[in-house]
Length: 358
Length: 253
Image 1: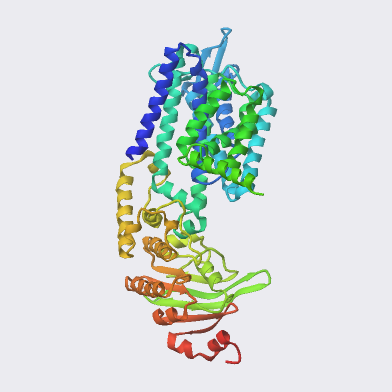
Image 2 (image 1 turned 120 degrees about the horizontal axis):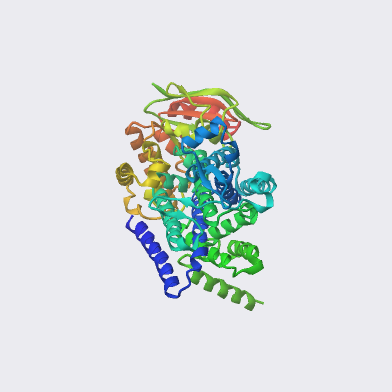
């Protein structure tokens, strides 16, 4: 347990060190991409739990991210002031479900409170995860991959084709997300530092929860299901229920990430639901070492940051595709592990030997 | 008292009648063996009893309750636990962790309790660990607790698998060829272990090919041939049964 939390402390130290470095070098703009990276990392941590520990692949998690983001964006921007005479609307307003504020042009804006929008977004993600997870998780291997891919495509096409979700433009003008103590999740540069810490604080909280889970009775049962599902069943472990719960848990992480990043960015577009995003998340879990939460987190930090800063240019999606192929071919246990160097040396010396052979 | 009752069970795979109208009872506190030539349907029967397969017709009662419609994990949680002919230990887990998985049905920390690391789970984990270590000591493999389970010698892996089943505190233990792959000394030790398990009050039903082991430890034997029961008796009577001799040695014997 000491080791578990000392890693958390070390990671928190890294987050602080990065912020201090941007301060010393007077480059605070890096924090914007690093904050966005944090929310993607939250999704990736949940996905790592599903893929690495429960042994179930999902190539549709951008879908859950988009469900979170779109529901929250829609509810907090949909203006109901034209209907405020309706008894239901006024009742909701009295109950605090709806909040009024002036819009940019001095008009009235009556929208759902962000907290309730967030709750609705997560609940919808949970409901959808349960409904599709039940039948889909009965599938294995490529069949499961294809089914989750199909789910991702459906969410993407729905986002792209639905007029009230902004179709190809998505939803913009999403307000900041108010928190206690005067904090707010928003991309406004005046709250850049606090948002950086809020986002990574959320990631660290998520990591603590997942690390606890891995080292619990449930974590042991998941490892058993992953290792030998029939034997786990013979020990009384309901494999289907444990897989489904993990799927839903990872969907919650993805939808929370979607909600907060949408409020941070002030909007969301259909590209967040695209299949290439889902592939990217899987690639990062893979390069992190599958059943390696810290590996996935560090790889997410590096790769998402580089991607968001535009280092991969127009080859952004290509990079993640290539990563996935290379990892599967040469380092299926991921990049961050103890014996990687010696394995590479052996690989090199073996190919030398093959060349020398007649 | 009967702990397990198989009543008129049949199972067909395509054109193969694997089990046909099979009935027998297992008395609580006994060691009962299922024998028969290869392909007689012994493992199919085990899969039917333990819920890995559903019978086409017939009923299986565990105690007073029908279990033939239940999935394997529910049957296990009721106290009927099996091992596998091909050892199925959990890879990437230590011997101790493998045994600890066996405590699953006797503990309750769920997803939320696990994520929040609630204080009751600490006590529960400690109890799981102590109980599992106790089982390793009982089996004489405590010194291997920290090793990766699948790295052990074959015979020891079998013991770990039985230990994992014992950690479930079963009322009925189903052993699928517990002596397969063991040498003579290990087979003898396995016989002693099975008797010890019976003396702990756990009923044992086993499938086994090693006849000397079966004859030595069993209280009763069921003989299967082509999915049907051809004999059910105590060991000495089975050895003299003409039908059994014919099935095992051929018509000329």
